[in-house]
Length: 425
Ligand code: ATP
Ligand code: MG
Image (tube, rainbow, N blue to C red; front, side):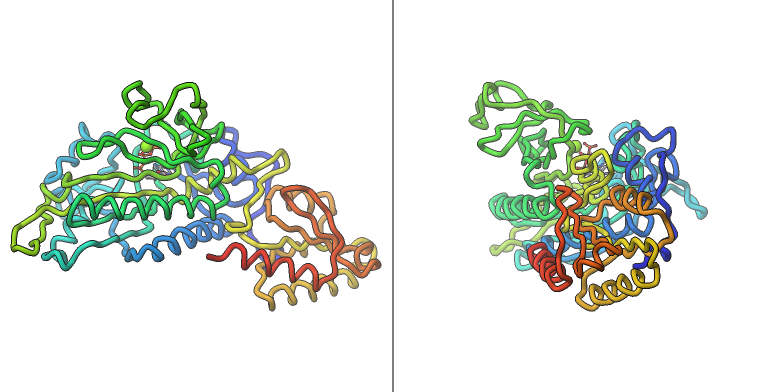
C-alpha cells in the first residue's frame, strides 16, 4: 500500500484523557480512534493487526477440529432467566435494551446460554459428541472502569470456544488440548515467553480455572510466578492450602503484575442442566452434557503486544501480526525522479513476491518519515536514497534491535521470504 493512499495520519499527541500507553501509541500511529471511554474504532492499520491476530487464533482452533459459527449479539432474556444470569444482581455488567415490539433484549457479554440452547436441537445421542464450537464475536460489558485502553473495552472482540463432552474424562482431554493450543497461540503472537498458565478461582464445578496471564506493568492482575515450572497462581486463590495442592512453595514464587489474555473454564453441568442439554448414552440413559468455555480477547492481545514490546519511539510489532512486513521509505533528496523510479520498482518486486509492503511515497522530510516509521512499528524498514542507490544496495533496518545492514535486493527478498515461512503454521 502506498502511504499517500492511507487516509490515517500520525499525530504527536494522544487525546488528553487517554492515560493507557497502548491506546496512546495506537491512536498516535493511526491504528485506532477513541470513540469514548471503553469504545475504540479499528482503523485500516488496526484492523490489519486485529485480523492477523484473529487468523492465528482461527488456525489453531481449526487445527483442534473446532467448528466456527457466528451468533447474534442480541440476547433473549428467556434463556438467561433459565440459567439464572439475566438479573443485574447476578451479572453486574449487562447492557440491556428495550425492543420496539415490547420486552427486553440484552447485548451478549458471553454466549454460553444461547449456544447451549442451539446445541439442544443438534445433540441427541452419544454419537453426536464430543464437539468444539467457536466464534469471533463482539462482546458488550458495562465495565465499571475503562481506563486501560483496548485492554478493557465496554465493547470488545472475543474468541469464545465451547466444548461439549460426554463425561468428565472426555471433557478433561478436550480441556488439555485447548490449553496446549492456547500456549501455541500466545507463542505465535509474540508474547509466549511472558505468558503463564495461571491457576485462578474456579466455579461450582471445578476447583480452579486457568487464566493465561502475560507479565506486564500495565496489568490489573497480580500473579505469583514459578519460573522453573512455567506456571503461576492468581492472588485471588493464593493460600497455603492451594500452594500445597499445587505442589508450589512461597519462596520460589515471584509477584508480578499481569494482563489476563485468555481464560478457560470447566463448567460441568452448570449450563446443560438448567437448559436441558442432554444425550442418550449407549444404554439409552439420559445424561447431561459436560461443557467448558475458553476465551481469548484479540483486541486485548493487541494492546498487550503494544504495552510489552513498544519502546520510546513507538510500537514494535512481531512479524506474525504486523500490518505490513516491510516499510519501504523513499528519501528523494535532490534526485527525486531517480529515487522514486527505483522505489516504485522495488515496491512492485516485493508485491510480486507476496511481501506486504507499506511504501512511504509521501513528500515529507526524512526526519518526519523516519519518526512515523518508528511510531508505526513495522519490523523491517527499507530505505532507498541517493546513498543507497550509489552503493547499489538497500539500507535495511530492524525496528526492534535498530541494527542496520546494506543488502542486495535479492538478499532482502530472500530474508523476507524466510521470515514468512517461519511465521506460518
Ligand atoms: P477480566 O478479569 O479482565 O475482567 P474476565 O475474566 O471477565 O476478564 P472472560 O469472561 O474470561 O474475562 O473473557 C475471556 C477473555 O476476553 C479474557 O481473557 C480477555 O482476554 C478478554 N476480555 C475480557 N473482558 C475484556 C474487556 N473488557 N476488554 C477486552 N478484552 C476483554
Ligand atoms: Mg478474569
